Image (tube, rainbow over all chains, first blue to last red; front, side, top):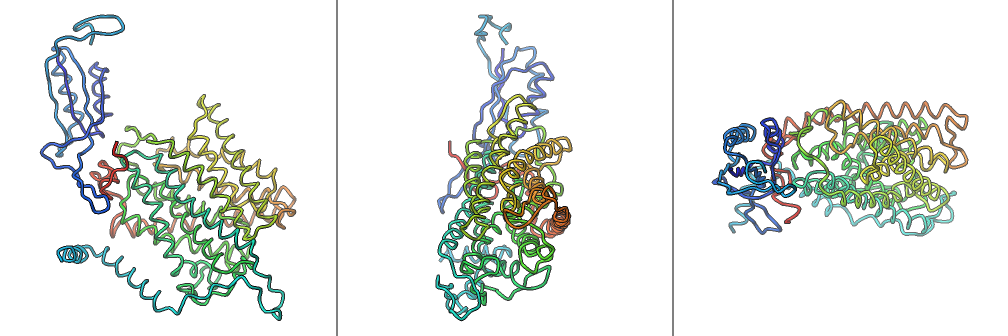
Length: 111
Length: 456
């Protein structure tokens, strides 16, 4: 099992969710985050005081079985890419176990 | 020293900024050059020899000044009503549009707007005779028992909120400088003329006998049909129909709606320009129509969607306020109940049509103000009764009034729409009105103002 964490533009959410559903993966967790990569943030100003602000992004997390990993990563990239700086990144990490709380199922059966 | 160098550097690089600074300088200079402010007519009776001139009434003046403050409060109320409905990344820009409009039109009105709208001129336009309010008669014939300044400042608040209403159509996608230029031009070339036609005694439709107590045509229709034009010309927000564009803070929306309801008593009852039975009639019909419209909207939602929503109740209330605006000083209680009950049907339907047709009147400026104002103006021709303020409508046996209302409605509709198309191209082709895609996605708060509304 692998955890796929995708940091994407907020405007890409709908397309990514639709894409995931189309390859059979409807289960995701989404959080609003802020950050920036090499691209700088935005300068904010409050009564003359400047603040270096971060850019709003979304982090989308899904745990998928190994055999579906490539399919999921590919669809996220396809749906979230605009070609402009700020498209985001995907990180893949190993997951040691997954449990469905309602039934107690473990491993691949739980995702 | 460096600060000054930076300031002049940026002024040279941005001609619009230079123009604004120059304009403010001109206004300041003319203000100082003008002889000491005209001694606002003291609350004293005219010389006994003057023929039948009504005395200045302290009660009327107090009510009109209080009403002016009430109407001013409607604009920040509108700011919250709209701001709660947009996405979080545009909240401050939306509030800024209303707040800054107060500042912009407050100055435009006293420098030349009032003269342009209410000055003598001809049937279609006022003139520049009262530039900087110079040479105004002590009282206006439209409010003979209060000092002219009171009537002028009362009208200023109407001139302020009208262009602010249009913001609902172009929410979340217009640049700040485009907004400023468009609003200034619109106030001067759409609001001031229509105001003159309907409210100035020698205005064409006023002379024709059009009835508009507090601004169904002048305020809501001009704003509403201009809103429609802009929504069509600007196009939809990026992601419209796919992305989640639900209101980010409904509590602000209800706060705003409540401030609007409160302030509207100044808008409607204040338009009697007197503290008398007529203003009381306007007050009561206003409250009743609003309440009925909110109930009506909730009932429609219950039947259509299964649940009555707070947004629906607030929208219904505002629709009721809009519809009763032209009618409040001409219809009686039962008329106001009908008007309130029916307007929600029309506005709700208009919104369903908008959803089917797919144009993006983001906050239903046309659906509520345009449609509601049209209905209210026509309703005035239906339900007016002589006992309230001397005019009968169709249901009281006088079909002629309805025809006058229809003519006024058509003229307002067409003029507002066409002029807005012209102004749109003027602004879009020069300094630009719609923001670019990157700025729209980032959000107007950051891209236009470098601010965030909430730090949490």
